Amino acid sequence: MTFGGDVSEVQTENVIIVGSGPAGYTAALYASRADLSPLVIEGFLWGGLLQQTTDVENYPGYPEGISGPEMMQQLRDQAERFGTRFITDEATRIELSRDGGEHRVWIGEQELRARAVVLAMGAEHRKLGVPGEEELASRGVSYCATCDAAFFRERQTAIVGGGDSAMEEAIFLSKFASKVTVVNRRDEFRASQIMLDRARAIENLELLTPYVVSSFEPGAGPALTHAVLRHSDTGEERRLDLDGVFIAVGHEPNSALVEGQLELDDELYVVTEGKSTRTGVPGVFAAGDLVDHTYRQAVTAAGSGCQAALDAEWYLRDSMSPEAHWLSERETGETPATVTA
Ligand code: NDP
Image 1 (cartoon, rainbow, N blue to C red):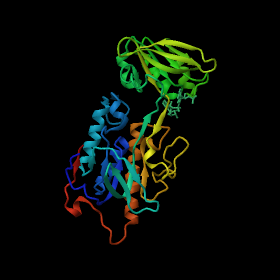
Image 2: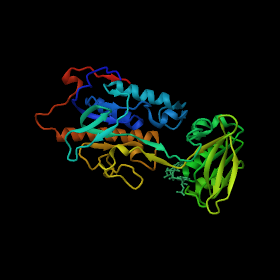
Image 3: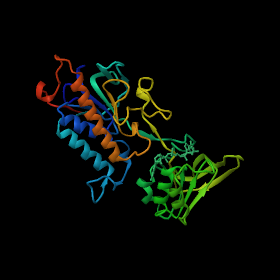
Image 4: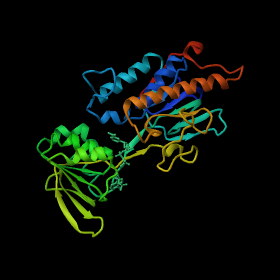
């Protein structure tokens, strides 16, 4: 890791933002414009799930659409323009101070402290955990049909899952693939009726139930050729020939670093107070997919990142003792650092 500024010593930051999707970068933009000189721990693979997306066509302000990575670069640049500093590395440990005060964040051995923390670690695609899933990732097994559908023109494909995401992905994929089989583990679908009806109306889309995936298999080469499915009730096995499969069985929030320190719901999403981004710990705010199982859009994540920065700003304003002072660029005369791994 190389340091472009003086963040190697333990100094108390105003705001540390952990995570770098639309929520994290928008929080950074607002916090930097509030003169809080935020420090973003953005991870090696900064940019979150949108880094895996080809075209983003539903983010306002881009009438022609924009690629996910390009959009994330622009959000990052915009935050940097106002003095945001970045550490391109992973937060490995977080220790929240239950009653407020200084919260601590580690990157390996390096300790950082902050009066306010915005958690924006996002969520990950849930995995099936079956043989072949990891080995054939990007060689036929994927988690985003909207990203990769164009590679599967006139090919045999499947979607695993039965929720709205699975239906949405299947409907999109059916425009490219010769066949889409939706494999769901129950006869009933979790998806909304309207999505199900749309899927059922598509000629090259088949709903196959109740089956679970036992394994994904390569042929003689390194790529996926078929899946082995198992009937959920009878245990009977069958082979499904495939060029590509997309797994859409939900998401899991990246909340492990704060488990046991903050209230999490049944699905391990961070719980926030009412419409705010406040958690149960003073000075700790959460935004984006880490708190949201429902909307999970770039624009909603960005909106909640904005809320988190405003909540943090108000918290710092209201909790400042008379002798405390902002560690802002303006007052310390320090040049904001860009820290890259
Ligand atoms: P959901 O949690 O709604 O659905 C997950 C699906 O995956 C379920 O069918 C579930 O089966 C199945 N599943 C979970 N784990 C496994 C497993 N290990 N093996 C096999 N199958 C599994 O997630 P979604 O991502 O679909 O949706 C999340 C939220 O986003 C929902 O609120 C949804 O309405 C919303 N959404 C809305 C859209 C829209 O309105 N256009 C589009 C996309 C999402 P089971 O039912 O048996 O648990």
